[in-house]
Length: 264
Image (cartoon, rainbow, N blue to C red; front, side, top):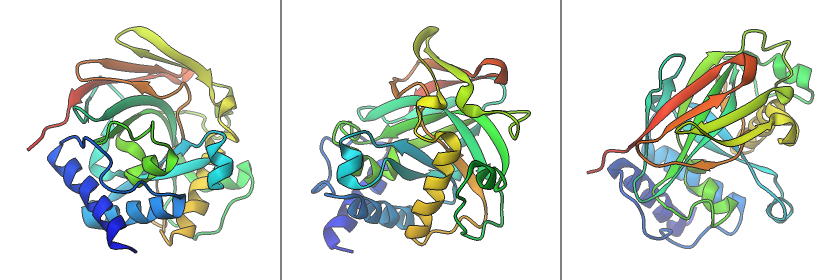
């Protein structure tokens, strides 16, 4: 790995620890996903915190063809997974950086996964031991992280900064998550409504992508972990002081309050 890529990784780790924004991308943007994941992997090692799961995000045309992938991934650190079964927990974002909230299905891979890649929905379901509704907090010290494209997004932990883990989907083995109508509101105003039918091969497909992605990077999920499977209603920009609520129809509702991350 080049010193240049290591420098970018360290700059993001330092900025995140300090809670401070970056006025520009800290180096040359990665040209492809291989370079982006090299930066991400080095940053994970430099950060050192335990990982409780992974977020999966969409790569849209024409970037999907150019990069050879229609999704990307990033780590979710254990300390940033917050219980949201009741109330509206405070979720920090970077002031002066990028901040958004996304309604997502959260699927938990059971401990003991051997690395064998599932091929079907049934095989994927067999690897799970829990499914929840939730909200991903997408935030980065760099305000242009999404505007600059998927490789930049992937390079800074996939733009993840937290996960609100909502109520369990009671009959998750028998529920087709793709048919659930999801609505996202900010301060009581609806900002997005959709179902996971628009999400490629759906939340289970996101799990399959992630397992293949991590295997290609030599990362084990034998300990299990959450998969935040992708924004259902879109990526909705937020700011400190706002309340986000995601309704998953009969499956329930999850909410959070956005606050500014502390900085040093």
